[in-house]
Amino acid sequence: NTYMVAAMNSKSAEISKSEDSMDIDSDDNKKFLTVRVRVGGELVSSKTDMADNNKNYDQAMQQFLPRNPIGFQSELKFRDESNLSFLSGSLSAHEVCAAAAQKSRKDNFLRDRKDAFKDFLMKGAAMACGKSTPIGLDKWGRSYWVFSAEPKSLFVCEIVSSTDDVSPPTKKWHRFAKPEEIASVIIGLGKENPCEVLREVYPEAVGLVKDRSWSTLLFARCQATTDQKVASPSDDKKDSTDEKGEDAGPPFVEDEDVLVESEDGSFLWDAVVVDIAKDPETARVTGYLIHYKNWNSRFDQWVAPDRVVEPSKNNLEVQEEVIGEFSAACNATPDELKGMFAFQYFDAKKRAKGKTRTALEVFDCVSVGKHGSHNEKLLGLLKGALLMIEAALPRGSVATDEDGHWNPESAALWRSLVKSSLGPESLMRCILVLEDAISPEWYHEQATQLYAAIPKQFRAMGGASLSAIALRVSILDRCLKYTKLA
Image 1 (cartoon, rainbow, N blue to C red):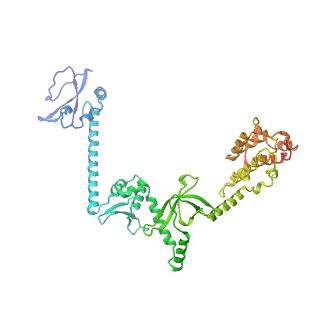
Image 2: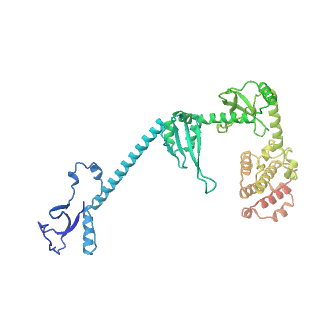
Image 3: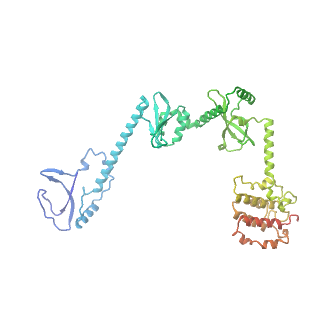
């Protein structure tokens, strides 16, 4: 409806609407009202009473719409006094706008629901009678189809653009016939469309997703395909394979203790068989799900059958021999540290360290891997040099009693700080602590001259660097009296 705003004198009781003109009192006591307009006796504007409209189903919602008649009167009065043009629908313009917005939202909601119901019916018809309508589209533009000829299979159509600008794009179809294949598609879609429709159409695949067995089935198929590619069609190789299979003995069972060969073939690890993958056609074992003993379950992995061996006496001897060789290599002192004076007294008796510590306990922080940077390798060597000096300290050079500042608990804490040092600053702090802990009687006479050539302790932290640490460690190693005993 269209309304017209008129400035009416509140003192006038009645005003005839048929007069062509009227005199408006100039008194400030005005009130802006809505009026009905008739042209030629026909009513062209009327105000709808919301309370009397029985067909207004949104009346309950409209009770919460904002109403401010006083503010609206002030706005109209200001526009009238300022000679500003205005056009309004009623004294409660906010209510009219809110009602229109509510009606628009309701119409959009009903239209969307009708479109969704229409799509649902079309998809149902497409799956029932093979109508050429996809059951959904994903955000990459691929369409998903279900045909009546193969109701348990999922077909995906992908639009492949041509390499040149002349040829039109082509369609590439993908067929997923097994439930584990459809389950992988559902996992790949996540929460994107048309995941919900696929979950309704393929409940068997949803079951594999819930119990997480779809990956096991796919791995078994992949392992079987790999074995078929590796196998040779010649009779000689088939015979040799059969003989090898006979020598390998029966397959392992679940919860059986086994030895698993590492990927590089260097070690044999203790493990337990958790699950077995078999070829559904030949029942041949294609893989084992292995849990390594004393390791977290997140390290469980599928391995090929040729990497799993029984824990026989011979295999256990090989395992111990390989581990022994590896331990011997780790216990070796790095060649870069063999020129230090502390290296000569590392295994000597009457040391302040108390019980003998193996080289592996001292130099386990030296190795940083083959991909480590030069600074990381140098930092590791400096850690090992500092730990070797501490291990070679003669008895009496530090206070090792319970009340001493180098008691077993404090010494263990210091060694852990050295091993966990991430840079020059933290390692320099450990060097300064060791220098303060050593008694001055265990320094050579030349120590004063050498330490005078390097920064004092209160300045050493400010200039901490790998080169500064290397110089300080070298001076400390040269200045100590390793042969002096308490």
